[in-house]
Length: 472
Image (cartoon, rainbow, N blue to C red; front, side, top):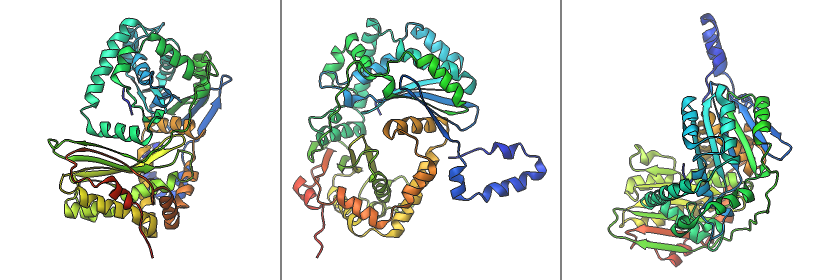
């Protein structure tokens, strides 16, 4: 639990040995465009209560099935912040039909993996098992959602577990710095809350808080039952009708979700005892469904990711990586494009020595301005190929495919077909990237968070002044 395409050609393996060379040759001759259509269809069915059932039969002997719920820390208040994550922890502590021991033994006996995670906008419960055990997996998922016991003793025990988890997270600088980024980028709004919640809230959350959250947010209209692997869609629909028909179609009270205001600002935690400085520089991005999402992803790919343990840094496509490798400006950096329903954060996370911060910022902001003014078509084409390769390589296995189905069904209301995805990416050129980056980066107030020996971190006004080029 956490607060956060390759294919086997079965038909080739079944051919007689004398035809093997021909089959391999035919597979090799399959064009890229043809391969986009040579994927299983994503079937979608909406049950009478509003719950959507979506699946892809990608073959194999295993399957992953999960319940994606449009509920996370964004739907909490300052008083209830942490309830969504607390409830996720309680999901596996026993139901009215299964004790915790019974639940754990049943999962172990079929060799399945049961897990869950909470993000700022979604809560997910999923199971990976042999395809023959799909009915059992669906029944377990429905049981933990519909019939949780939420016993007082289990709540107290899990409270201590979450408090220990919070202590562990506080030791992970990357987790801490991104929580700070959200807290100042979305000041006074729910997106600024942490997923785990403050310690004071965790110590006082009770059973009524958990039940209220379920009745308010766990409705069929905000749920997607997604599955991938060796899954028959009609069978999955029947299982869903049997197991999830009792989920209410709409919540007892409609949750209020107001737009989250972005604020350019900074936060600094100087600690000269730390061995390296951890810094995030970001601007407001776009939401999932915004047409600018893909150009911003290409821009993020152009900036790239780098770690000094990688070989060939000076020969990497990312110009920032080349500079960092040749001049020793950073230990690592990671560009990111974090999206939510109506907003997002586009930026970079850097780990560097105390005496190279100023030079690193100069080169980074120079690259950001180059995205807005002089990026080349060749760089954009290369980034498009890299982005598509990473995207398709990620879709390897039933679990990432299932996650992609569930997330897209919640964010887009449908699963975007690969040909359409490829078409959207191919429409991007250097002119598009420059226009979109100018809209989101140029002359915008950034968010800056630094932790560690950050004495050399430039003044905010200086950073802000380098967010545009004066062109004559």
